[in-house]
Length: 609
Image (cartoon, rainbow, N blue to C red; front, side, top):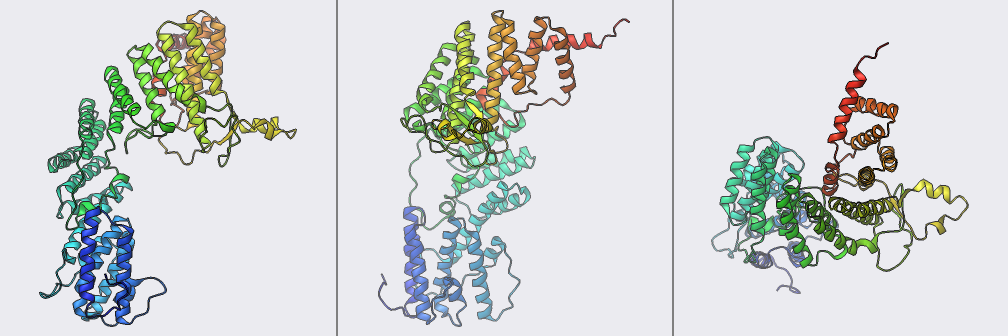
């Protein structure tokens, strides 16, 4: 509107007011700040400096140059402070509170200099600076602003308090989080924001060990608006922490139902409100309740974990129908885990968990079908050989360029693990059907895939004659580093080891059922060698040694198990994938534990001399 025209102090108040009104309308229409809005603010500040005869600063700090200038006309202060509020809103939306702190300190230093008042020690706390900021009152004959600076100050205060509370909650600074969130709750809040504030307060109080107070805030959140997703998800977390499984699952069912209702698009927001400024914060926070498929996966997995097989099957089959109906299966990379929920699961994990749930309710044929569907999608992506090396992942040329392989070498290990787990579950399904020959074949296929992974030092030994590159031309090298993995999630390399042990035990059990104890002994011995601390493998080795009348070896294992009993713990060092955890729990050990107790009693009896 003013491009190309020389800037003049007499018209700058009108010009800045028009800009502020234009920004307020534009941001409300598009429901967010755009690059053009940033450029408009910058150009207006440059025009202010030109009108004052101040050269543009080399540092690029236009705000500092304006408020440090010797003279600012009083009629220009209200629109300038209005622009300060809009700039602050932009920076809070972009999660740059530090820039706003610097700006407010500059503004207040200028105000004290103009009035001759004593300059107090300026804090670095954004909320304190916003409280202290005192925008000038507009004169009656000034151009009319759609939203004055004082109104923007209230919006910024609530937004900053909410943002700061979420940050402290994420950093586990619970007392600071509670203080900031309470300030946001007592500020002027529209109903959608009030839902989020009370939900965050509920999460904070839950972590502080005050479940009843947390529940009161979640009830307030549900009363506050038509967006029940966040409080329902937080309620499920609270009930899980309290051990109220039925209430937890009921909350998750309500969450799935709430997310299935289509929401109409939000109308333009005039004037600028808190809900507009926190939109960019929500997806990255624990307040996000995800999509319907994510909520359904959380519900299904919790049903499976709590032994509610029929409910788990129903939810998993509905979830698979949702996934197969959309485009989520491209590349099998779509994450279906809720923020703050179970360890990161991907679509192949959902197939495997579905197959596991079907085995749990003795629907073995359906489980085979689900595994076949998964294998048909990922089998072409399973590599011929994997080498575990140290350092950064590196990819060697694949055996065949079709279909395209994933760019990340670590993806190859995931494909191999998923395919191996599918064969393991097929083996367990065949075992449930009484088809031992087919079960043995599937367990063997699972193990063949798992033993494709070899340590890198074997490549070095085999390539000492200079033919290393030729030997690796169809293989993949991946890193065994685990630094980037969340601490609660079992690393893929440890999942690999656990799958080997479970597959060997499962195949050994089939050999025992066929009366081929010597073959079973080989599998149980290898399982113990791979994972010496695995109690189930040791128990089954003890059992088959006793059946083979190898008493001294059985007694030695009995004594080792007794010595390890006090310090026994699962050495997987993290949460196993749910399908694998279920496979481990299905390995029978009742008879083996009974034998162990009998042997321990016999070893404690004094012998006659």
